[in-house]
Image 1 (cartoon, helix red, strand yellow):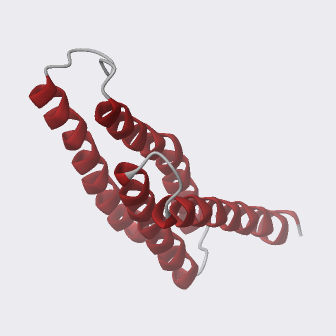
Image 2 (cartoon, helix red, strand yellow):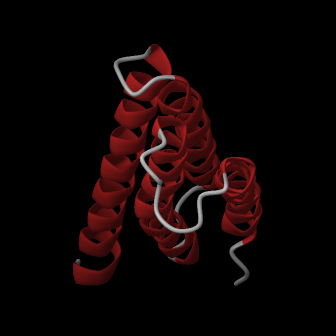
Image 3 (cartoon, helix red, strand yellow):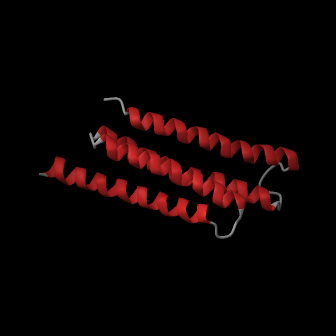
Length: 133
């Protein structure tokens, strides 16, 4: 079975990842910052947005793929993948604009945690119902 939904969702997330990485690279180049953030607040923020994405998305996509391979309903997979993408866009916009509180940062973080929790619970449910009963 080919995890088609995960393939599409992963591809969309990779495009966002590359966009976030390009923001870092372009600012690094324009500001002539070789390694690290060079004490530049904008660079630090862009690095953090990119890093936060890299910290959460791989695990979420792995869970999505495992759920798809375990034959979870497509509606659940589409919802989780779509909400994750929305969450990461909101988070990137929110944190990318300000290091303090913003609706995008809050909503993106909350949705990321909720989708991770939902996928973990779905995986546990699938394991218990299908593989142990």
